[in-house]
Length: 423
Image (cartoon, rainbow, N blue to C red):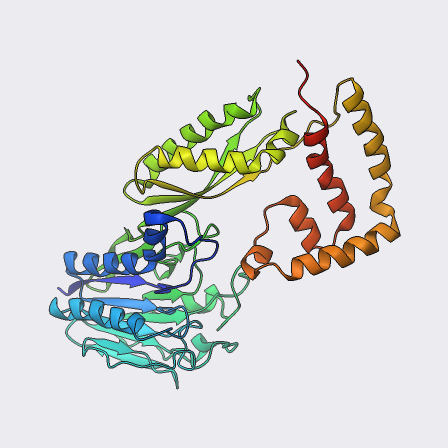
């Protein structure tokens, strides 16, 4: 009886630069910056503890060319740990670490083998009865169907296909090395170790077609638990298939309904309670989160005006939970004002007149031209990370050149400053 275990991981992105992380963010910030390395160290520790036969990395070990040799030296060090434990590693280069992308090179330990980029390669492990088939990326933009050229399965042994692809129909990732799920299933392999898609997915079982997702979330778009898969094979059959957590930082979006708030100050307790619940779910990982205030409320304008204060209070709530327990990436006011503003008095009357003036502003061609010039210059100067992930509704409208929406959205700010809560 032949039995063995292996780990399937992908999209490590060692030393990936982190977007939107201020330099001043102390120990929590340092922990987030080192998260990709820490997660990879955890992966190697798990491989040693589980006594696996080999590790498969299905692309994007790196995030691009190294800034210096420290990135490569870190990887070699971790492979040395595997070598000491008698564990082999098979690495396929993806779009981020394609042969042409990495200009610096270091010799790798003898237990590491990188799939050729010239043509599909089969690596046989005779003692285990395993054949691994794969082809690395030569350059970043591979638009050919690489899977179509993979060899037929080797008869009588366990066949693993290693492939970096988005598959067909995935709109969230660049469509590199496109192929279909049906094509992979029909190939006759026992397991497809895929990479490129950062959300973990088991697309098919027997044969298993698997995206493990990335090893560590790097920003707010990569939320939830991250890791690899531990696979147990007995006599060519997968008998156990388990998720292997590796991440040290858990990213989350936390929606906090504020419809019950009668004062802006009521938000703090709601945010703290939400943070406590999410921290419990994150277990030993640092919770890196975005707080989103939601609901329809008469305080909408006040929330918009008090954004800086609300952000600071949320950060205080996170720090109050303990050192490196939670970190606030951003607080977003996603509330809505009631359909009609009620009230009396001079302020309300003045705002009513202003609203009448603004009602026609959205179709004012002269104003639209002035906004296009002023706002266009402003948004062009913004950093790419802000332009690529806008949360503020005014900024989002400005980036989309929707000047009518800009005029509409700024009324929230004006309302907050003109209308004082009545006693």
